[in-house]
Length: 523
Image 1 (cartoon, helix red, strand yellow):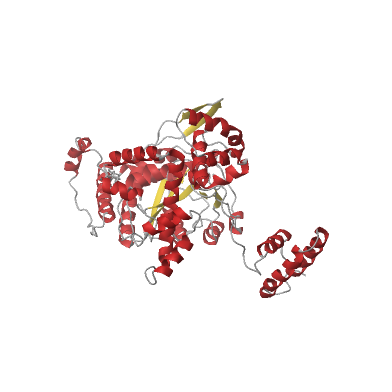
Image 2 (tube, rainbow, N blue to C red):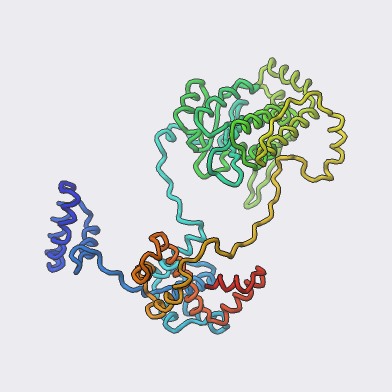
């Protein structure tokens, strides 16, 4: 029968049934609850709460009771929790009498008798509840709830790092690198990176935006430039990879499509290493956005793919053993990706001849010079300089070669290298006029008379005394000021005035803050 009546009818039914429910005996309450749940579809516990809220108010919510454990108790509990090395409430409860006595005996803590009694008598559940916000802040916010995997993700099998064994050339890991700088807002350029598990051959493509159709086009284009057929790709669980478009492309071309486990980055250790050793080393961490930046990045990858795959040897793990807590790794001799392909029996002789011809015609010095020119263009774009690059005609390689012998004296020579910026000084001043500066002494007088007044009650009282002086949006400002005042009052109650004065003096000396600014911080 649940759900047959309207929402308005349910609301009208609650106060009527609530009065009869509260006046009934235990057995009668059970019958009333059965009838009410059957008609409304509510859960029994929810119905009991609704009846409790309508008690004595004709359908409105009853007033909130005064807090038993105020800010002073919570502030003292935080100090004791830190002093106990952040143990749980069940372990902290029996420790509190000993810990409080020890801290008071050594002069580290001075608690008011009322605060001390509340802390000692608080239950373990109450301690955990009072410390819940502090614990959440130390863990970086609320715990993340993993959502149920969508249907498209369940169609892609999972592959871990240990599942690779010895694959043929053509099984690659793929990932996206975001060139967003210090902010992920807006649109920016991405790099699609693919690395071969067997040889380490790495391909990169510049994408103007992160979009599934561009991923498919980049995969189709890169598969024609690689010296082996694309047999399989392994990606993370991002929606840019795990979608209908990429899955359909892999099915139509006979490409094995797998994904890593969520929140296990080591499943893609090969591509994560190339993201740093190739992409970040070449491009850096600046922000690139727009078609011009994507074209400049594509020119860089056109040159760098030859330099990285033919003239950059890399290690490859041969064996890994664990003996107790000791891990021993043995690597093959460093080789370039092209050298590994030349030694692979899975690569055809025609492709080996083509690789040898390409390597014989490459000049590593010219490639490096072109890489530096492309990096300079990218660095200018990241700095906001909209410049156009012209094709380099007969570059002076002799001058570039002579400069390599002394380039080490200048430190980092890559123009895209991330420079260390100076930390910003801590700001302590206000940028807007304080709307409650003139009425704050009056607010303090109200708080001294009744400390449990809420910010909304004080705000309504101020607006009634001064019509038109405060807008609705300034309620949050007043609530923040009241929160700071209550925190300061709680600290004063726990540590005493002398301790706060010493802390304020130390902060002023450490930050070289003027006395007037330090006073503003306290207020």
